[in-house]
Length: 264
Image (cartoon, rainbow, N blue to C red):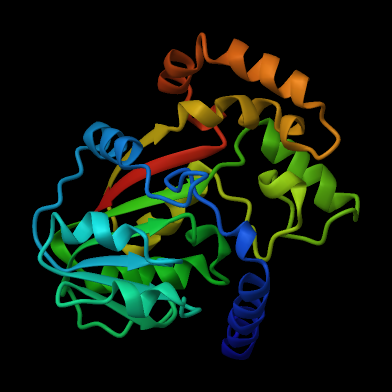
């Protein structure tokens, strides 16, 4: 992507998510706006992710909620986001620092970061290959990346293709989140694309798990449509709970979200 197009895309994305804060969502943020530490630790355990070493770089840190969790386990947390949040001043301390910046041009030295988290922001980057290259550049050779991304290698992906192809949604805007409200730069992310993008950057180690709780939405994204009756959503969601964990283990690509441990 040409440099001027990338700059325009970043500025457009800044403005969009500044005005649409409700769309900045993640499986790791509860309805009460807190970090779901139980889920985070369960996923870290499955992926073999440890909190050894610092600094810990949180790309697309959003409101900075992850800083409290990380600062209790690491000597230094650095949150980077294209939009500064009002929480940053309150959360900043001797162990937690916040910067306004872009993942396409990180203000860090080569191989200077021990761990990077990129939680539900990578799908919005205008140039994923450039972002993966920057992540590889600043990550230490013994470091690791934790990546959480929506996944469209499922029925939700089929719906996304249909909605955008029909013209009902602009390209790269459909997602089931927030009752199918259009997003800004919601790229068509799949496990194959993740491996391709990060392999091109130089990464060689990949581990992935699917999010069992959102397996039902990966297969039936209509349950989050604003016209779907709440009773139908409740019945089907309870039904899927009977087998979502084993199915997500066998077929992680079915879920609406995948979690990754990626290393050089």
